[in-house]
Amino acid sequence: MNNNEEIILVEELINILGEIGKHIKKLHPRRATLLLSSKLLSFISYYRCYDLLVPTALFRFLVYLFDRYFDQRIVTLSIEELDKVSMPEEIKNMIKREFQGLDFRYFDFDYVLLFNRLKKDMTTLSEIVKLFGEEFEKKVVECISRAVDRILEELREFQLRILQRALEEIKNKKSVKALEETILECVKEIYVGVSI
Image (cartoon, rainbow, N blue to C red):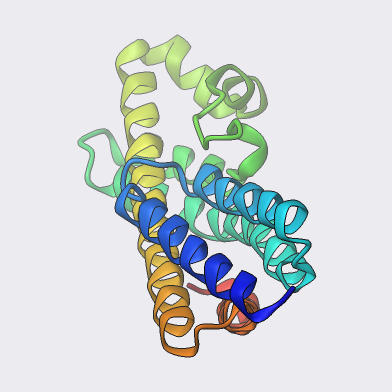
């Protein structure tokens, strides 16, 4: 790729990162990251710019890290949300013990709760619903849903910081390589303990 092609590609990268950054609050973090990855793939094939291979792979890896982060946070935040709900303390404690098993397998691609799977595996939850009615089921689902919303917001904020850093570096250095360096640095930060 010659210098003129790189200048054009850098401008396109700035436009794409800026456009996705504007809509990040409306996009699911996994979908936004995969969208970025797919845009980079199209640039690779069009410009034959193999410097974008690593950033593309790193964006795909971010999806995995987001799922790990989700697993780390879902239990704690669901319990925090449950603590805000009015219900007998004995029942609350039983549900908290069941929440210890919450992880990504009880959610779909967009982190939407697969309640039937959860209810099937969490026997206490099923028994509580039988004994006390669907009102308890509704409260549990609302707690988990609020926890997921909080995680999604955290992931979106982190994703926005990545995009802002990448944009800043690309604008300053006017180089495709700057994207790789920035994304690699961000992924390292997440990977160390998967703490965003």
